[in-house]
Length: 160
Figure 1 (cartoon, rainbow, N blue to C red):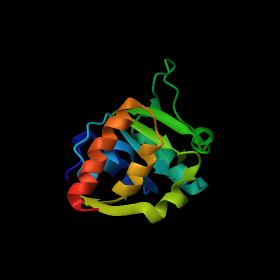
Figure 2 (figure 1 turned 45 degrees about the horizontal axis):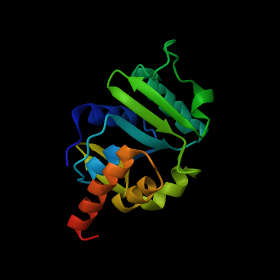
Figure 3 (figure 1 turned 30 degrees about the horizontal axis):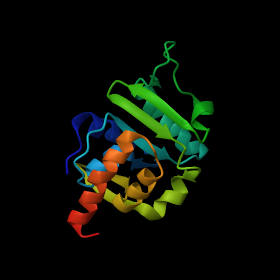
Figure 4 (figure 1 turned 180 degrees about the vertical axis):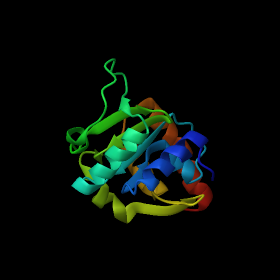
């Protein structure tokens, strides 16, 4: 399944900077064949110092600023060292950089649940559809409940 153009470009910038990350959220579902509409790219990134340096360089190249911040504050290493969510806007669209998902599930804990997908020349780690369903089941937002219908239907179509 092709990635939407702005998401593909965002993913290529991250990959070109050798950032260790896993695609999660709606784009993970889209890449796995689910017919979802999403407005941002969500990633969980490895929280090591060298990976934070690479992610910061990628964010600099993307002109990233914190979303909904009138000061247009740019992320720095102290932000990236936190396990929380960094909701950013870039020249290629919105990018949510997550230290963890769920209560405290980090990059390493998600690694056994990734599928490796190739988009053009870029190999990506994408959260498996089954694991994405588990994540979405813990969320109460209406948009996540709607996405669950499509994600489960896609799993059923695949016979999983």
